[in-house]
Length: 98
Image 1 (spheres, rainbow, N blue to C red):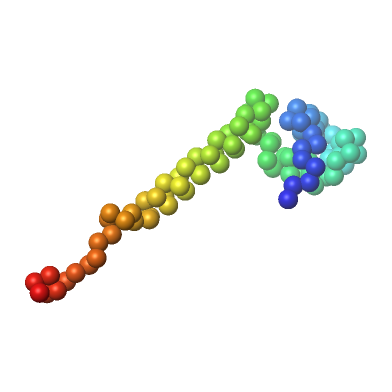
Image 2: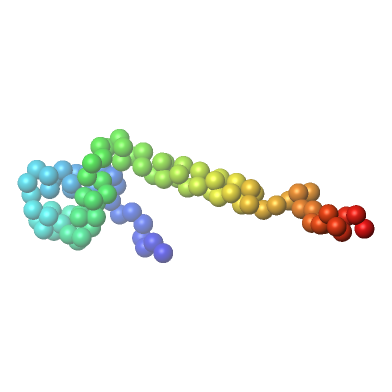
């Protein structure tokens, strides 16, 4: 249940974070950009160590990760489900002799 989606681009997020890193207070930057301080803190936790190119690659990497997880889950289901040819009726040796 996502709301409106992304309101700010990666470049804008980096600009906000760089402004704070240069010494501006979170409150003043938040007012200037019309952002809540909590949003800036969330951006800092998530994007602080990333460069611009890494931040641009992030959505593509997330999609690739989802695709690979689906493949692994599908294979795990196929391995876990015995097929009809593998299932045999178990008969004890005594029952086999009779």
